[in-house]
Length: 614
Ligand code: ATP
Image 1 (tube, rainbow, N blue to C red):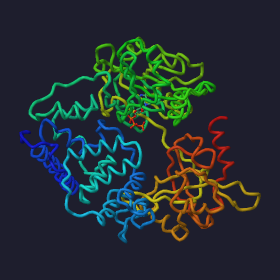
Image 2 (image 1 turned 135 degrees about the vertical axis):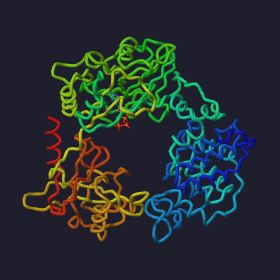
Image 3 (image 1 turned 90 degrees about the vertical axis):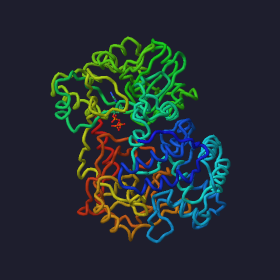
């Protein structure tokens, strides 16, 4: 392998060269050729003292040096329209805003791919000659884009970029901004080609700049680095297993702990004195948790320096239980604004990674549990530890399920799992008590077992009332449905109104989906919100998630879908029905059932209450 002996400065390298590399890699099939081309680029056009300038553009989703751009496709389309000085009513502006539905060409081949639709629009306004933008200049402008606070500023940065690039280059810049280059080469391969120790070092630091700076010479190995307080670590992950039997077999002969799988945010807490950070799975620092949590952490984590691994949840003090998934942000904001609430943030620490001056990830889980007991003083409903025979279980009332337990045989696992399902938990996690904690590992030291989707059979038969266009392969075609439940009709009459219930896309084969869509196509009516309201027989909220791209104009021509879901329902703030489903799937299409036999809202509510035991 060639050594990195180039004298080229990365900063002065033209971005057009990197864009050509992207074109080449995305079109090449074999992974080894993709990798060697990347290596050649690094060796020829980048200086070892500044690999980061280029690598951050190749792995934009791992770059934490600049903040987020605040530009997802919808805002980006409006900013591009303004940057290009286009009228909002022009056909090209319409194309950008409706990128999911189709590009200019009659086949709509670009539909669902924002950067390709953008390239189509840019092509008519940009030349093919490169404006000579360098990698250094691009990074400068991207910094400016991330730090600018309003759309006007962002628009002027985009205009400057458009000025200095041709369409191909601008298309890749758009993908960098969206943090997805779709190159068909894994992050693992890029890391490996860059330096044999790059992935390891990134896993324990989540710091791409540091990786690029420390690993300048591919031939010089880097001593394995341990984790440190203040630097996010890529989390240990769980392997999915199908049932208790498979789980038990996989951990055969090991000492096993089974734990409840809590349904919140995986958060790593780094405490350094009074300084506390909350790193998510994507190593973003969630400072919004500080108001509700930091005092508790500072006072009750007894070591000055410590890293905890666990789940951030919301505890409901009036119900004396964890609140359902989805309210963390709201409660964090309420704590920031000093609002009174029955709900509060509660952190459940299930592991400890660092204590005092040492990383403890090399110790066994059993030893780490002991450390958790010593270091963390639990505060009911605010800070809990998940350890067998203690911690959260200490508050357990007789008859209530355990949160953590040592399993001695498969029956123990099965019983624990059954209780978790009855308690409507997300599932269970099994862990080898003799294992160390390994960043980014999903090799089976931790196993997760979740309930299968329950088959609700004829009970959850909902009517298709709208459709959403897909992206990628299904761009320009309806790929998901908005389904509704009937308002209970008077005796011996057909329903007249349908209440929106949930959005569902998964579960059907491409062929089955095509058949449903082609049957319904004659009745699609474009949703012209806000110009036109939905058909009068549908009741929907104003929430944007509930705005399908098309309505079914005649419910009596529509089709019933049997929906299955995770056993839990969620109280709905998005859809009109009071409850919606978590992880809904289409079980089958009920061509055999006429439209008017769809489930009604009242029956559904009764079903929810009976399964909740209320
Ligand atoms: P999922 O969508 O199933 O949560 P994932 O890809 O986010 O999967 P996995 O590592 O596969 O993550 O599953 C483990 C996840 O479960 C953790 O990331 C964590 O957020 C959550 N979790 C909840 N309770 C526990 C627990 N007791 N031990 C470990 N992880 C737990």
